[in-house]
Amino acid sequence: MEPSQRRRAGCTECKRKKAKCDEKRPSCSRCYKFPHLCSYELSVKSFRVAKRKPANNAKITTQPSSTDETANQQQVALAPSSVVTPNQLISYTDTSDTFETNFLSSPILGDSSEFLFSLPAVSPPRLSISISLPSSPPLRSDPRRIYFQHFVAHTATVYWPLQPDMALSLILPAADLSPCIMGAMIAASSSQLFRMARNPESKSAAISATVECLGNLREAITTPGFGNLGVTILPTTLMLATTCVCAGDTTTFRKHLNGALHIVQRDKSKYSLDPLWWMSLKWLVHLLLMNRLSGLPLPSRQTKGFIDWDYLLTCMPDLGRIDLTSGFSRELVTALNKVCELSEPRCMNIDASGQLRVDELPKDDPKVQTAVKSIISSLQNIDKRSPVHAQLLWPLLAAGCDSTTHAERTIVVETMESMTARGLGSYENVLEFMGDYWKNGGDMRWDLFAKQTGKDLVLF
Image (cartoon, rainbow, N blue to C red; front, side, top):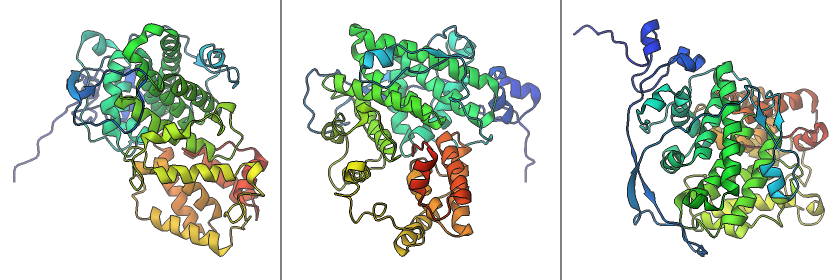
């Protein structure tokens, strides 16, 4: 047997410190904790992604085909940094229906503690796709390049756990041309990295990228000649919303959703043939459902009367098929939306009779416990560190609160802790709520306990 050979590969800082680092991307703990010190040399590899010319006033009848798309090589480059104060963070003033007032005129807050949560550090699983950035001199000198690479390798598996490769194949070429979506990616990555590694550099980078992204987003929204790049406005807004909910900021999350709904209402006839637009609609459907399932009063733009569900459902596959991006079928979206309607006060005593929660069944009822055992059994068939748990917060919450044995609760807690370690602040909020409910809820149903305590839960 030949003796094993020692080799050191990776970033130059790791070589100097003789730390272990993967050859294709920085992965040692030092790189995660001190990314500004890592001078990793990025390789070059381009995507071949289809581009379509948007059609004006196009009527949506079916999903765009991928077989007749023209391939075009694109490379991704970071947008220039803006000079911002380290503690700046954009928020919104109110949630009225005047979109231009709320979405474009935003005060700057001095405290970012509500935006970024500190969670224990862990090395998340890596993405199988091989993506890298151009080796231009500005990129090599840009300290944010490691956040971009972290987004590709890790953050994407949280935002799109079922098909990160497909989502990246649409997002990355758009980021090459659109500063606003590039800024949203940097903000998402650095925010997640801060919650994982708890390093102040990532926190400052998240705040700076958020400020820069919102500035670019306002410019894009108010510029009539933004052209084909206008399709990036919706995914940028949704990425900012997802970053907020992952950080536990449910208030700003809902304001971003209001903005996204306005964008869909305004631009739905412009980009009907663009694959990025279709993916964004699926993303929006997921976020809207998870927000509605929270059971809390919704902002005015998210009520049934404003959302055009008939249009949004055109992005979903035909009846009987499951969408591989969101994990939903058209029937499931319709059913979940109906559940949300039944939970509204006007329906509680009329349309919702026979429903589990409206029947006010206690958690020791056989129907409730049968549902809990079914959820627990399904969870045991999924690896605790699987990224698909990012979309299972609702059943995890229900099973955890209604469980009556220590063994069942342990399974739920261990699964949720694996997701908090990946930077999902929403899971941290739900874990905190479940602990409070187990301690102080008694025989009260958990949905009533949530309303009584005023806990804001977004199930994403």
